[in-house]
Length: 158
Image (cartoon, rainbow, N blue to C red; front, top):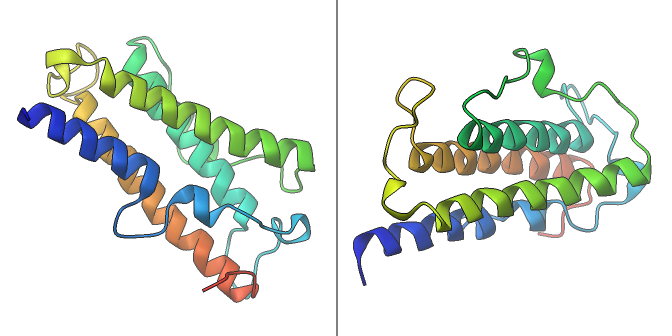
């Protein structure tokens, strides 16, 4: 198997499964709706805020990869949700959008051909490969935070 195919497969596995850690999908499963807005102890965020931050950041990374004219949100306020008490519909939409955008990034990776490592014409040297790693790294960092919040709320299964 050619090296690029192995790298592509490993990137996709990292984005979907997490590999050495719990996947984002698993971390976000079966959370009682009454717990998504709780901030245990002195933590500055809830599960909702972390999930929405992941959604916003992931969307931004995907759009940056697709569109040279994309304008990122203002940092840092544009990367965190304004809504602090989402409805169940908003929560479900957030989870759905995380999945949609991740699959869009995977589509970009699958369709990259020989351009996976090629710097974009915009930005300052980023490539699809680098952005996929940034996305996976960012999501895994916040996945761990979600699990910590769940443990503190006594709603984590292991």
